[in-house]
Image (cartoon, rainbow, N blue to C red):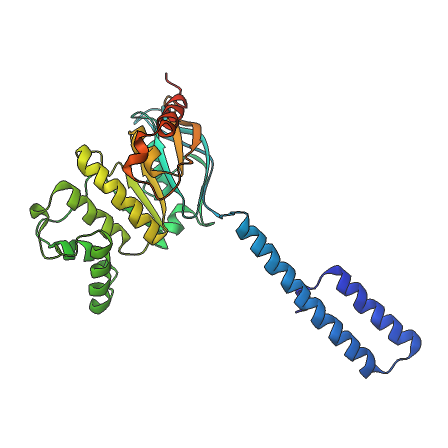
Length: 317
């Protein structure tokens, strides 16, 4: 208890002991006084801490989950001392539960950044921390779920068994696997398709399966690399609303790579704009469209202005 006591309390303790020594008070009397004071002070301190926490929450504070500091990635040319700079001195903080999109032209480093966070490639310099862990430590802690452009489903396995695959690899008991897969199917709206095969599903439905599989291990962070780029516009719109619903239900942190400025603005809390040669962050745009969002917000003047602001953040070469 004493480790939490402020310096004023230590001063009072010293004063009590000094008075006891000088006045030769009975130990029991000073002990009672001392005990009453320390107890009151301790609870006052607890109250101060609780008030600080309440103030922190009321101020809208959200802890940073992913810290990227001065990150650079250089792909070395084989047989040469030179190389291609994919990312140059990138600095970015992503808060817990935030939806952040990365936009920019091909070759500007969006996917490279995603792969560094996921521990799929190594950085050249700088630092990346996920909840204070290195990308490797975060990966081993199963903090990530990854959704690629193609869902990469196994044609010979049913939808249930495709979603179940990572759970099988972790040797999760069968009753738990069955319950988890059922839950994931409900989240992505495919509860009636569990015993179908991938070839029997549309492209959009297959991508939902990919999302369900990524969520099966209950990761804190969902990394999505152009997951809807191969789909038609009508399917994309439907999946946008599905993804936002899933995000609200699961409270995941999402990092979403896309070439579409409209897609990024519709989905995100913030849009990070990358520019090439070398790949670098040139702008971060806050998206202040109220949530929950629907496709009607795309018809507003404010939406158009935000898209223009993102576009203007690009520095072409």
